[in-house]
Image 1 (cartoon, rainbow, N blue to C red):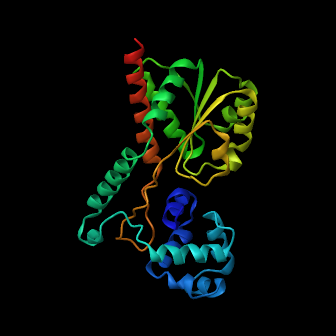
Image 2 (image 1 turned 180 degrees about the vertical axis):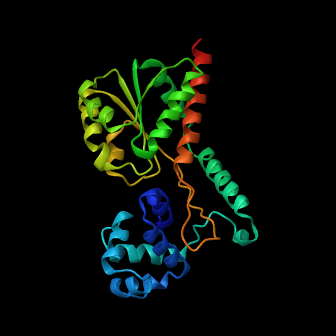
Image 3 (image 1 turned 60 degrees about the horizontal axis):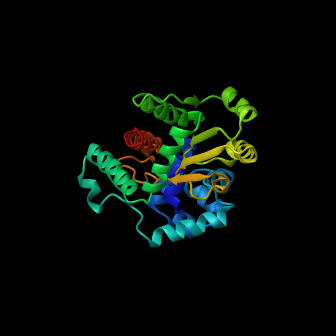
Length: 263
């Protein structure tokens, strides 16, 4: 996973200061490449500890690994928006970013797994759409989308529901988890419990490096929305959860197709 993808995944957890640090680094990567962590902190008008926290928040083990990632990112062009972006309005930049992300989803080999997931939704008696924090809205979107097909599943979107869920799991449960970062802290114990009790698990995420990926029965790793507008001195990123919303609609559509064939 490259640096800009990491920023996209962890964007909502970044502070204003951290977003400003990232913008400064992208404007001048040599702040990191040519300097020690203390010098880089001074150049970014912050501290050594703030720089280290920023690197670790993005999933790097330390400053050296972060520096290497910066060096690699300068060698390749990861920018999805064309070089003429400065001639575009902000609305054009945003619209193009969404369009590119949706096109990228269409190029993925998800068709067979989406058909399989539709069958699971039809077959399993207990289905939970799970999303904690901001991802709760994405889980609820799947719940609402399936209403139009007369399929009623339950959303698990708060800590109380989540904490008690594992107590009732068995092999008749299907868990569909929406999580941009696929946090191991949040989901590791639940997924291990689900596996031990025979529950079916599906993960929809942008993080292909998470340790919980190997614990699920099916995973959809979606493209990160790595494009950001160029008209601000502080990073402004389109939230990846918009892609999760869109994917919830795709799941619902596949379920509707499955119903037509099953009837």
